Image: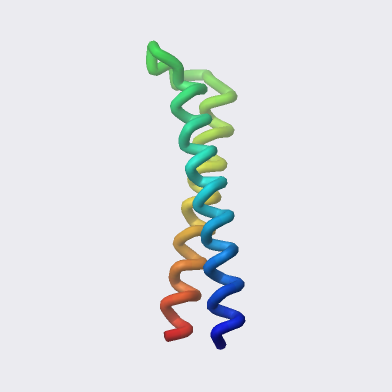
Length: 67
């Protein structure tokens, strides 16, 4: 069980790093003018943010369920 927990914690760290990067890219894509309308780069960043947030949540639940 400890091995599984360590693996999940490592996955969580990687997923959180990717989430942080996606959120940064989302902000950068939006730009100073908050130009989100018809902005493909922003739409992609939002999609990645949602995907990585879901992954982070899933891994956290798996870790919690191990206890």
